[in-house]
Length: 451
Image (cartoon, rainbow, N blue to C red; front, side, top):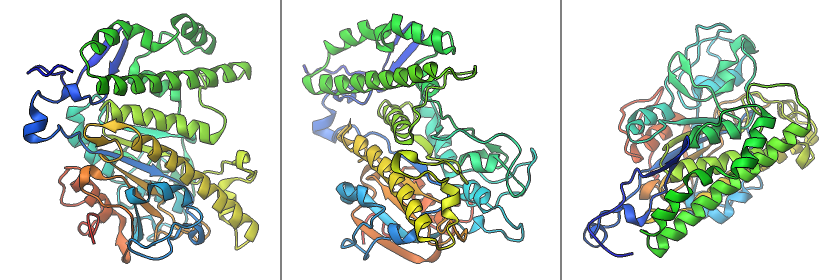
């Protein structure tokens, strides 16, 4: 590319007929001559919080050994290729998930406390109360610079309103994100709805009308094709390659959503407000949502995303991996070896989806590195033993470089019952968000950057 004192604004959009396409970070967006004198422009840190319900079988999760010499266990083997990007953390607890005299309801308390560190009020009514969650603290800081302050996503439809767990509202199990102590954020599970939120709405939510429109339009990218063509003439070879990969990813997502919608239409499902565009199989659905996460991060539409792989207390079955029983039922195994094995199989399947996301981010260029280099992804649950409903020694993995602030390749064991919120506080700090306290935090945890 010819070097001049002109450069593309970081927030560059291509527009056409209701479609808005944000671009990924390109070399041409760095000020001319900035790289030799000051170093390449550094993208912001992205934060992701991925939740799995019902606890995880410790025997398959807990790393073998500590420090840099640890070994991944059977459940987490899919993360082995990303060892140097991964921190396994043990000893952390979310004590606010305990009953404290409120009796049963550990699943609801687990979901509501994971990112808040606040004991939720036991109610099935509208008088909800928990606490602001870590993702929303970050969203308040980053939201002024992005189109969406945050995205709240899921892979399983939320339960109906009312009570879902021993006197606790379904709101506590349906989300992990709280905008304020009394305002839970709803999750989006429909890939089509998310795609249109990111790139523009169509005129109809009717499945047949939507399919006909897609066939006529071919692709949402057709609306911005002229802008893409003009832009490419101004870019160097490296930027053209990045742009091509980005557009190819969008086309692939469109194709997969269309295929899911075609399958839904052929099933002749009852009329719905929006097309049922989620793939039937869990992995296909999860990966489609994760690809949309990558696009949203890559184009800096948002820097904060939560993803619930299933709602807390989920009894979803996973027939595609040979588990016909409900997940929740399996976790109450009462030491039955068969149910324990089935639960561990589900745990492994969930981690494999995390590995899919990590791989996508590791192979997505972003400024002077990759998207994974400039992100922090927290994966885990607010329950450890789903059979006993314990909230201590939680399964926790932290993946990504955080813009150079975090060093992976280690298993760090913290003092027993160290608040999980200490880790959340550290994540916020390393992403540039300063806050003195979050929920029941007692201070930041140590050794994320080094021994």
